[in-house]
Image (tube, rainbow, N blue to C red; front, side, top):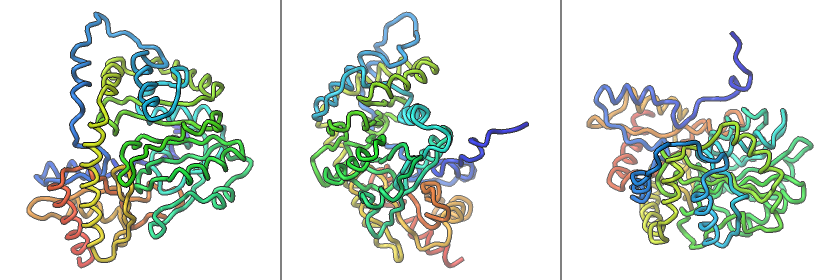
Length: 396
């Protein structure tokens, strides 16, 4: 029986590809420090669970396809607090930021349409764009230049008659790069000049460590038709399992088409929406506390990494990831070694090999993404294990 070429073109997630090896290692008694997935260990605010426990309707019914009004209102109010004005009509609630991306690409791409994406990028962009019939047009960056991609000349060189959008993640997953206001404006001007969508994935917006400004592309009011925001409660409130995201745009034509896909999948889970609406009640002190915690983890992770001979990495300015070029031959072989051969006192570590974060063949072969989502004590041990494993791997 035949399978679709779209499916064949997609690849396994680099964050989850080695899960079978991890399961086997754990079954054999190994403890694994998991730095491969951005699953925070920060406690989810209790407001979420209280709202779900207090849900009193007798029937768990379908919600509106565009989302329940209390959640839409909460999102509108949240954006108002950071100086961005949206209405409920500008917001579609989705099953995580992942579905927001899927619906967006289905709404704007035709077979062969191209999306410019700075690489390395969140690996699932490959899947979402290819599934919609599109093509990833990568803008390559390197750690020696802090993975900077705010270069109008390089962007312009990638634009052709098939270009439909520029997609950026800010703060960036997997590199931790953060755009300045001037850099965002530079990219926006290119998108505006060529009448392209500017897709701004801002799910890590609160996690910026060296500035107090919360940058949002929604402030660019001359770009109302171009800008599309992808947002989510997963990282912001450490509620990854709730699967609540948002597709946000003032482009009424785009939102009308996206609503068709929202109606086709009926609705996002009602209880998750109820809990998510309550999450937006937490105050700025919550974000300040979480940001300080991640800043300490960032500093520890970066210090441990740069102490390893031969490692090349840029200090992440936001999100909770760092990309690192390791002194090894192949990151996938190394990850397999970590889970099948290496251990120290019954412990090992898991990272994400970086080839899946690139669209250019051969890129990222000896790079990994590390998610610094563990408490400092565990993170320190994990980084020591990584250093030990690199040495043993290279002297096998």
